[in-house]
Every structure is written in structure tokens, then in C-alpha cells.
Image 1 (cartoon, rainbow, N blue to C red):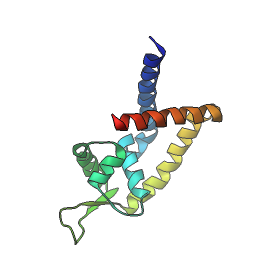
Image 2: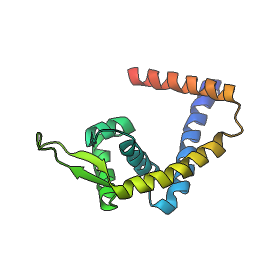
Image 3: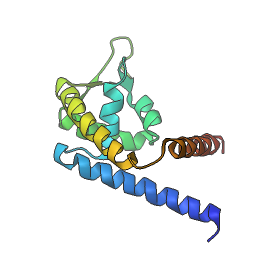
Length: 142
């Protein structure tokens, strides 16, 4: 296996392992990583978002976001709102229950991230961030 193949494989395995670690951390809260990212995104914005905007931020297809939002609404973490000026739109708002869970889970996820990255040299982490950003930028132009 050449270095590019090895890098690609390590990237895939690391992304998968990272997701599983976050899923395990979130298990008690009843959230998956995608659910957590949706709640965190909505809780961190100053304005309500549409489902389409949320899908774009999360890098998901709109069709995938609908059942995700449905679950969050059922859990009373998010609510849909219809603006008076455009009845076709559905805006997403985090509920008070969602904000409380966001505050609690943020601490847990921040702790997990700190533990996972604790032994990595800061300079090496900066190089990894630059490489990942370059890859992200390149894949967006293909």
C-alpha cells in the first residue's frame, strides 16, 4: 500500500472511530452524532435555520435531514416554526429542553475531544488541520 492509499485508509478509519467514540459518549443522552451536530448547530446560531440550511451545514442531503429533524422534534429538542411572510418555509428552533441538553452534552463532548487530542503535539495538530482543510477545500471543487 503506498502512502496515499495508507493516508486515505487512515482518514476513513479515524473518521469512523471518531464518530463511534462520540456516539458512545452521547448514548445516555439519547442522541447520535448527527443529532448532536444538528442540535449544536441550531443552538449556536443567532437566527433560526431552514432544514435546507441545516442540511448544507451538516453536509447531508435534505432528504436525510427530514427524519433527523422529525426525531429531534419528537424528542422535544427542536421545534418547527412557520414564518408569517413565507408559509412554504419551516424554520428550526431549539427548545428550552434542547438548549439544556446542549449545555450538558457540550461539556461531555468537549471533554472527549480533549482526551482524544491530549497527547498530540500542538504543532503536529496544526499540520493535520491544514492538511484536512486542504482536502476539504479540494473535495468541494471536484
